[in-house]
Image 1 (cartoon, rainbow, N blue to C red):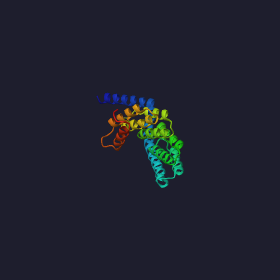
Image 2 (image 1 turned 180 degrees about the vertical axis):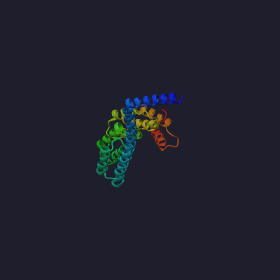
Image 3 (image 1 turned 90 degrees about the vertical axis):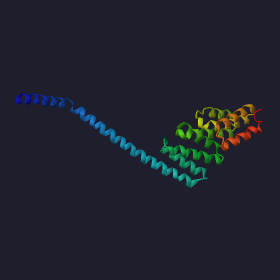
Image 4 (image 1 turned 45 degrees about the horizontal axis):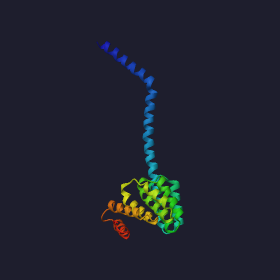
Amino acid sequence: MAGSYDFEEQERIAAIQHWWEDNAKFVYGAVAAFVLSVGGWQGWKYWSAVQTEDAAAMASQLAKVRGDAKRTGDIAQAIVDKHPRSFFASEAALTAAQASFAAGDLAGARSRLEWVMANGRDEHRGIARIRLAAVLLDEKKHAEALQVLDGNKDEAWVAMAADLKGDILFAQGRIDEARAAYKLAIDKSDPRSPLRSLTELKLGALGGSQ
């Protein structure tokens, strides 16, 4: 009995050895791939953290040049060039656009806002859309401004977009349509919102519900 057991055990061991000889390279390959994937993931997380810290450090410089449109634009561009997909790039582009607008550089503001619309983070695109439409209104590019606002699909920005649309329509002399836009802005805004009070004043100036 013992001899039979030993023989069967030897056969199993031989079979395992044979299987290992045939498949060892695949097992080692799978292990190596797993190790590389884990190492790659850890490396990516480290690289991402370093990149985020660098972008944040660059963005911190913006507060030091507040009011200087050129330097603000230069820093923002450096962040956009080095960390284009980061939160800080979108935020810096919005800051640079605001600085350009305040300095009367509407073309510069428009360029920054268009970049955010096309490449920025989702959380920044809504405000970029509103500001871009406002810049286009200042440039008297009414049709383009309306087109930008009509592209809004985010419920959070409906009230503000409608209010600005009312301003654009009013500038075009389209009073009835402006009134309808202001009504929509009021319907969609929070009762406690300062925007609602301002929109109500505009609507009242146009004759209210007439």
